Length: 319
Image (cartoon, rainbow, N blue to C red; front, side, top):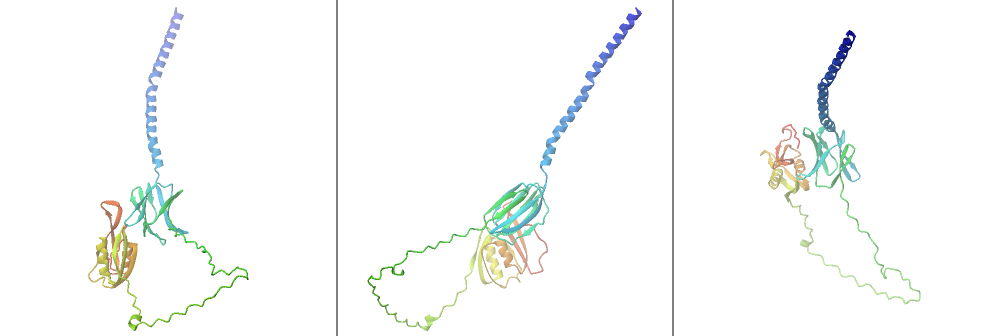
């Protein structure tokens, strides 16, 4: 009896241990498994944001150059990576605008040009993540844009010259060709040339005088799409500027003791701001550019202040 009772007690003890282990094994892993699921879900939710941040890497505008290849002028913008940009053609005055997305500027703001039709190239941090590059043109000109790895090239092609007419020999004339007839042919009769007409009698002395060459007449200013056509001959600078201001709508402020010297110049379809810079090259000036009808992307010359040389304000502006 004692042996059977001891055996039964051991069996009950073993059964109790098994039941305890089964219950513990069922309840304990559940919180751990739930924590793993929460951690995995958080990790997966962060992956798209991290990958998006990796794809939106900022590029650097490292170099802007203007070069000449054959008859074409090329403006090259080099970046530190593959650029994403938007090109726009604006008028009044003529210019090509390149907006580089997710970009940062690391070059000087202005790059001058000695090759037409490009006058200069300007660059600025237009927005915190947008760099704007503006190619200022002297006149409207055809262009194309090429992307080679990390360089955007704006190529301005030269106008093709008109084809020259080919000169073909006309039909030969029998009178100018040497005769190929046989010697037995009948000789032609040579008629004498008619007598020369008598010399004209001399004209009266009043008519014989050659009229003096007239001076070129001034051309009224013509202003269209930011371009100026204008000619002035021995006119005071103040008077010429007044006519340009009336036609273009650009306000020009000048002291009463300035602009009394004579001016003789001519411009044909020329950028008005560059024409005025040449006219006022002996003065200090401040050119003010503003947006058109609230459009910040389209700017034009609005006003000019003229000062004696060496007495103007010393500051510059990005136009």
